[in-house]
Image (cartoon, rainbow, N blue to C red):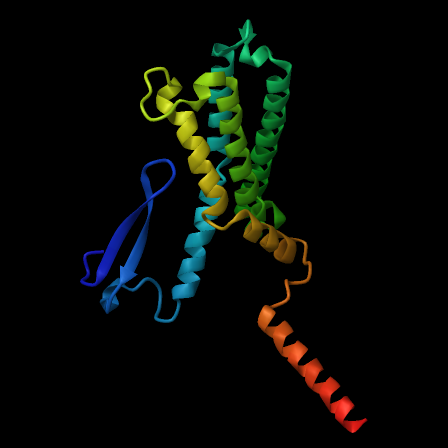
Length: 224
């Protein structure tokens, strides 16, 4: 990163912190002894890195830790005259999330078992990033609702809970649904690679086919 020509500019997110960067390479020359892999294998390295990132974002243990923290919060916070966890609507949402987290833990065990056997992860591995990021965001959303009016406090308010961690996570995890491969892209990957559905038509190919069909129509009209 100290090579001349590399410039890193932090990007501030809606959390108020710079979580990501944009990086510029201006006439950068990388020494041969610092090349990862072989020349021409950059796309292979990039894909391996992205695959690791998707798996990291879907860590089921992290999900379970967040769920346990949520349960503790709901046992302490009050809504009306009772605890948040005793509210039927909030408790139903909590139980549904608990089931989702348990399912992701079992799915993680399946992936680990396949890895130990030297088998591909298949569909089990493809759903991790999509499902885990969605569930993590829903956990933070429920925490904010369980705090009632305190849930809207942020940025060092004297009455905010847990240092504003739940509000920060709510916004950060919303970004993760987009980052590391958007939810829409993940659904396409699941459909095409996991369910073996037809690939989405390419616009350029459709355009060429349309031009060809228009040309044939013109030829027929000329012949007539």
